[in-house]
Amino acid sequence: MINYQDFEKLDLRVGNIIKAERVENSKKLLRLEVDLGKEKRQIVAGIGEQYEPEKLIGQQIVILANLETKVIFGLESQGMLLAAGNEENIALLQPDKKVPSGTKVY
Image (cartoon, rainbow, N blue to C red):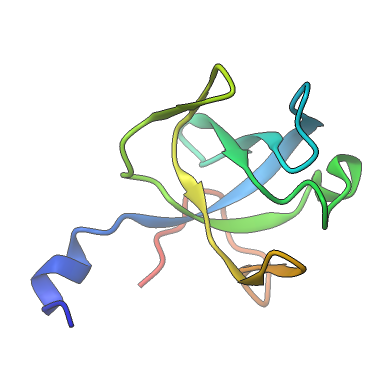
């Protein structure tokens, strides 16, 4: 269990995928460019076996925006997208209606 103050530290935001492509030499990884309103971020996500990159463009997703940058396959991942499921069945967490890019999730 975490307390509310710890939860408040999470910066969850809605982003719009503006570019998506496969990461070279990986079946699972996709490189996403995500519009967060005032900035754009690169996110490397392990959803490549369930999602075709071209079908993700224009989709809204929820990301953890204040996660430390991590280098994956030589690419900086500047956040983490949120998804539910397991390796065989992944579902992206998405708002049920369009909201502006960068909208905070509470």
